[in-house]
Length: 400
Image (cartoon, rainbow, N blue to C red; front, side, top):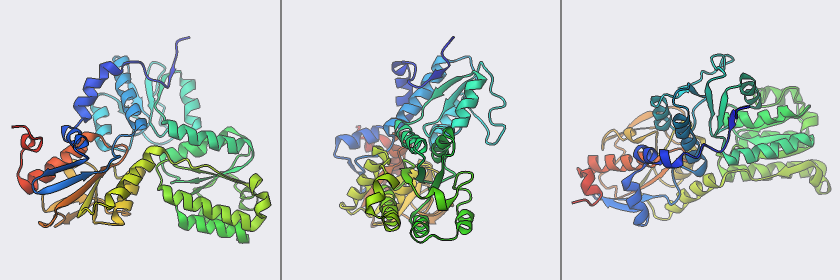
């Protein structure tokens, strides 16, 4: 039988590498890397975070998509959803002929045996994987290794009858894929906690035994079927959506440990409380790099990445803690020296802000989420310089 499931690419990296460089590389970013992650241009010093942009998992997913187009030039190729949370990258894949499957119960109705289906870096629910296997189509799975590591922990909890408590957003593709792993084991349960406020509510329930009906009303979209807080919070194991704010995940873990200890005593913790830090290293590195930029005292920060990208939103929140911060989705968000189109840190809607680049601005910090290609970083800097200093691209790169 011909192989229909691929998880390690097709060995076509050398063929697609020139195309990837053309689409996503930035000479400006290369120059900044070579010069201590800084650039002086147009009367402004740009400071680039030392960890930024495409992580290994994202780069791998994008490479596999390009390899798939090369490997199957005469087949229909579908993506189950955004391959990563970056509109620039997803739009490019669509222009290459990859089709995006619709949301909803009829998602896979048009998929045929001769088709190819790409699974994004976030992964997909276990039931979807089974459905695709039954369809008999070719499946190219780009699920990130860090996500797979979380799944292993959740499956371990489920196998042992321990409830998975996941710090994440229940509507996020990655978290949906993660909690679906509990469905592989009869009777397994999960609870999703979005933030410290929700964690505090759960801790109060664990320690003081609150009203189960109120609990289920509050978490109705974030718990497994037949979840009983009185029984299913007696033994818990923690996991994370890999792109959450790492400091918050650690705080939530400690909050829950204290609550469980208060209820059951320290001597029972080994059998009742399990905790593994499953924030991916790339997410952590990018968050640490933004905190490091604070020491250099930028006058403002630009954070580049999809508005629906959790890791990018968290970078924006961190930066906003020490300086005025503008989260743009791509370089075109820099509309002029006067106007910027952005999403405020912690906000939900895009806005246009006037007067974002005061004349006295001398130092601008730059970072990008793990789904953002280098060309968007370079183009952002180029636009700022062109609006502020009227310097052309060749001069910016030092080409004479």
